[in-house]
Image 1 (cartoon, chains in turn yellow, blue):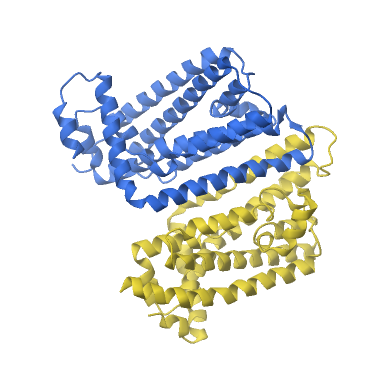
Image 2 (cartoon, helix red, strand yellow):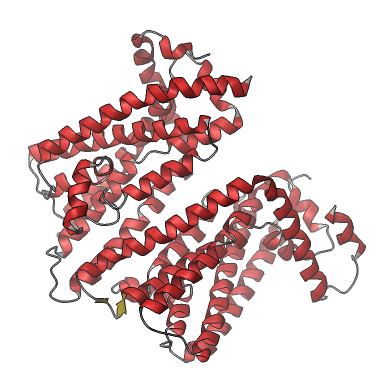
Length: 273
Length: 277
């Protein structure tokens, strides 16, 4: 029974403030988990240190100075913490524990329950990491973002877009949980493949040209590296085109999700009796 | 089940090595047969491990677009370290992490009280009872990548450097075990140990690259906080460029670390007052 899916739009929109408040409370109750924010930042920091060694190794064609590397990886770590989505893992464990059945009975569509929980925890992340990033930019002379109101606005917009795209992608992959017990891992594979063109393994600017061309067209970059590139003033390709492609992928997954949902949820009833 | 076999031998010589090896066999067989029900998961996890190993090997290629050698490491040599990273990380996930994770349950549910009454060394029991079956192949995969790295760097190891490598890898395992013991001791005192497994994860993650790839002060810090023991030193041994003194100092430091870890663990048990009483 998923009548939540067919309830009037106004219902779940009105539920959002309450869902967000609940998510904020959960995040603040389990404060220990906030530490994971910092372990997530470990990988980009390691890459940063290696790049600094590469750049210091003598005359190379890298073309990036220390400041740009530091700025890129600091921003990438923060954006990643703000936009990466754990929905497919949460869904995986909810399916196993039976919690998903409870969620299906609530009058708010399951997608929005997960999305709101994710958004709530990211608001806490933003409140903590936003000031940290600003403080670092002020305190460390090497950290430099071209500060213009338009750039800043575009970077914030791109970050929110990245969050939405992550949530939609992760939720769509989570639906595979109706067929397999590995949906979390499948999403991780998808994300891992994308890491070569998302700006996570290395800034796109330093990747071979053919990978850059692919990256502009694929969804991954718009979930990780795009906001960082904008903030640094070094977007690969045209920024406006980038926003258009991001919206395109958003639309693709927004269309895909309900399609898969309808097939999957029927199967779930069959399994759950 | 296994409990009977254990109590039959109770009271015999505690130092009987064969008995403990036998116990280890019983522990691991029971974990293994429990997990055999999920053979598809085993296949899926192995496929994932292969994926992430290839992922990391391709990922570090980007650094070499701009230079053939970084801080004295070329691509093939770096692959040796990346392979060892997966080896050591596999050891952590197969041997140490499952036991560390159980520690919280032991304390919360009062299982530790029960374990303390068993005629088996408690540290042995909590250290090796569980086995991460899904990650058993990871060390094999890691060593394979290291072998590919050696071949592509055209550095075929001599028998001497192979012996040095095995020794240094054993030291790496000792260091990791010592860290696990300290974290278990912390778990006894803190009860809530949600972040403790993370500490071991971070320590191993830091060893993803050889320490020379980081500039100072990070490089010095990672040599003193013995992250260099996990992958850098074994890799250097394999490549035949390890500082010979480490062959003597390494095992001593490894043994000392485990001894300190055991002391920390035993002290934490002394402060433990039981969960069910």
